[in-house]
Image (cartoon, rainbow, N blue to C red):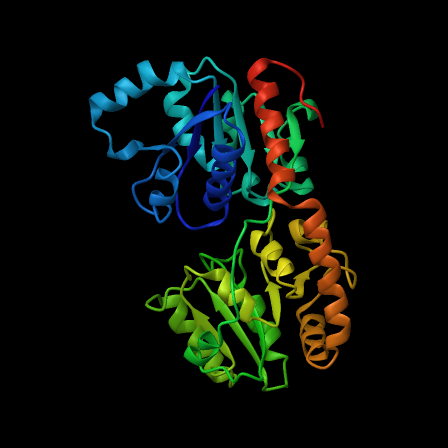
Amino acid sequence: MKILFLSHEISRTGAPLYLYHLLKWMKHRKPDLDFDLLVEEQKHRELYNDFSSICKVIIYKELDYYKKLNLIRRSIPEYDLIYANSIASSRLLEIISKRVNSPVICHVHESSDVMNNRRIDSMKEIIKTADYYVAVSKSVYEGIEAFGIERKKIRLIHNFLIPFTTVKNHQIRKQLNIPNDAFVVGTLTANADYNKAPRRAIEVAKRITNKDIYFVFSGLDKNSRKHTMIRRELSEHGLEKNFIFIEPVDNPIDYINMFDMYFISSMVESFSLTMLEAGAMKTPVLSFDDNEGPCEILHNDVTGLLVGSTKEAAEVIERSVTHTARLEIISDNFCREIGKHFEINHIGEKVHDVILNIASGKPVNK
C-alpha cells in the first residue's frame, strides 16, 4: 500500500515530531506500507534529515511550476491513501484535492478552541476532502463532532510517548545560574504565545515567597518586544533572578529531566507530549483544571496535580518543596499509566488499523 503523508512543516514541534516517530515505527514494523511525505513550507525544517532517512520528502514550495504540475497530475493519483497530519495541512489538501481519488484521513492535533477560531477556515477545507478523522483527545473528538462530522468517521487515539534517552545534566542549572539545591518549575514550548500563557505562569511566580523556587519558561525570542516588556515586569516584582525565560531548546528532554515539577500553564492544550515525557521521567505534572487535554489524562492527587487558580498553583508548588513523598507516589502512578496506555507499539497498531480499514473501505474498529 502506498501512502502520501502531508505536513505543513517539519519543525521540531509536537505534530511533526509525532509524525516522524510514527513513520519511523511504521518503517521498521509495517513492511506492508510504503510512504512519502509532502511538506508545504520551506522554513521550519529542523526534522528534514530525520524524515529523509526513512522516506522520500517533497517540499512543495521548492518545486518549480512543471514539477508541481507533474506531482498533482501524475503522482497524486498513484497513492492508495492520503494522510494529513493536522488540519494545518489543509492548504496542501486544497491544492491536490482535484486529483485525489483515494481516501483521505486527517489526524487532528489541534484543540477545539483552535479549530473554532484560528483555524476555522482550515477545518472547513479539511471537511470538504477528508473521509475519516483521528482525534488525539476526547476534547478534540468533540470539537470535530461539533462541525457535523458523524461519530462513525472519528476515532480517538491518544498520542504516544516519543522514545527518548537522557541523563541528569547539572550543567543546565549552572548555565542558567540556578543553584543545585533549588526547586525548579519548568514549562517548555516552541512559541510562548497567548495560548501558552506565560503571563499566567508569571502570576503564579508573583505569589511565591520561597526564593529557592525557580521558574524556567521556554519559547520566547529574547530579541522580541514581548521579552523586553516581560523582563521589565519581572524586575518590578523582584523576579528577574527566579523567573528565567529561554529560547526554544533542541534538547527538551534534558531540560525536563532537570525540572522538579513540570508546569502546563497553557489556556488550552489538545494533548501535551511534554506531559508524557515528564511523566515517564517521574517528574510531577501540574496543570490548571480548565485545560481540556491534560485534565483528560491527569487525575488530581493520583497521577498529577490540577489547580483552579494561580493562587492555588502557587500554594501547591510551595507545598511540594517539602512534601516530596506524596509527589513521588503521584509521579510513580503516572509513570505506570504511561507505560500501560501511551506506549508507541500500542498506539501505532491503532493507527495502522485505521489506515488498513479506511484504504480497503472497511469499518474502523473503535
